[in-house]
Image 1 (spheres, rainbow, N blue to C red):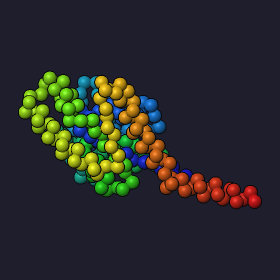
Image 2: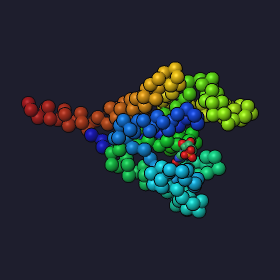
Image 3: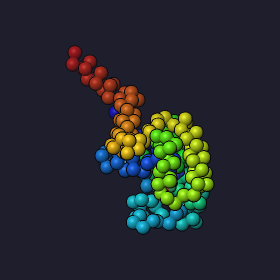
Image 4: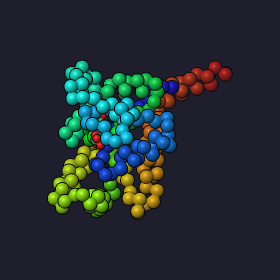
Length: 214
Ligand code: 5GP
């Protein structure tokens, strides 16, 4: 059986809940690993270096880019974020299925450079839902809500390039929405594990052993 792990990239608009979904998925299925990225942004209170991110200086990030150390990287909100090739290689070689929870640019890069990467897009259920969440924060002006919704339209337009779409329902409509979304993400991972490409060696071995009994 092929013991290498598989790579999954997951993205979606801010507010669609991708971080919570991935957190729930890992909690329920510790066999799935989450990649720790490098970033130039400052740690937020409670964030731990090496756990949430590898926090690096601008200079160090540039060095890593020049060394070709990144599997993918992107500018997101005035900072740079990237996944190290070594993280991907090590986890997959150990047979772990690895999730990269990264921005849309990073997902598109990963899917373009490797057709074995599975892309998962997390969507809000509706415009109204997203608008309600943005208004609920109470910090956004009408103008900024309009700009954000337009930006989300741009991100949703890229969803057609992914392999799977998870619609993260609102918990007020579907109380176990998070559980359902995490289960759907795990169903995608399970289905990829069961593909014939990962079963050939097993089938060859089984067939040979059955024939030997004659
Ligand atoms: P935050 O600063 O809130 O942790 O993350 C901001 C954005 O950067 C999120 O959309 C997150 O998915 C994205 N991000 C985190 N790590 C990476 C990475 O390694 N590569 C890319 N392309 N985006 C990342």
